[in-house]
Length: 187
Length: 187
Image (cartoon, rainbow over all chains, first blue to last red; front, side, top):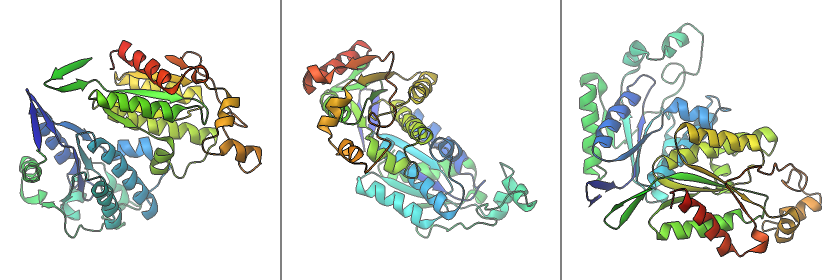
């Protein structure tokens, strides 16, 4: 919902979580979407996984428990921002269904919109893109616990939207997410 | 600075850190101030120390290092909110000058207003109020590491404002902080 005040649209805040494997295209879609939303007067915050982990969870590793705590913390911060009218875009792997559900519940409890987007790129394509070189390092035995390679990713069973980045352009993916937000009254 | 849009004032965000001993009156002043600011159309977030610690720093204790990390995390979240026009009130002890300076620097780097208020209640008065019963428990040997009792509190040398809660009412303290924010163009 928006309330027009002169040339300023006051949008309702909400959280858009983009879950998916490393190199699935989560951040690329989030950045493209942020640009569109900002151009239309939204307050937008992209909570980048690496930055937020450094700021809030530097002591945590990548065990199931630590990943869960990290995701909950990001969810808490997203909720604070969403509560003040910010559209929060969260391109963060969040491999466990239970962690994602916890964040969703936290938003529901505060009556804040929450949308789960599964950026559903296959592990083969992700490993081929390998934006941060993680799949190569995992294959070379230099790291372990890489989601999609040797660590679990629980595919969302019923996301609000599944984005098939393999058969459409980035712009098409961005427009697809945007259309969902519009349908939900969030843009 | 504010820009008036119909009946909606769009205020610049900023962070107001209320530092002081346990039971100094930090939260009481923050809540009173929040009420005034909200009534005037501000978006306000009070970052309660206990709540934020549970959400973001549950694994941390009360060592110097852990307190520092906790304060930095709160500072990071405050900065995110302030960047979106929220007036963030932080009634959190923050006993170390270096931690407080780090948060101030973080705001300066993003060109976000930051105000340090020292709620300067004496330890005798704080121990007498003892809102959470902490001073009594420390005196009884049931806990240790209580700021002001058996743990350090580095008194701010040059805060933006020092509030003398012992010789004025809560409302007077709230008005004093509010006047500073007005002088700084923040309300």
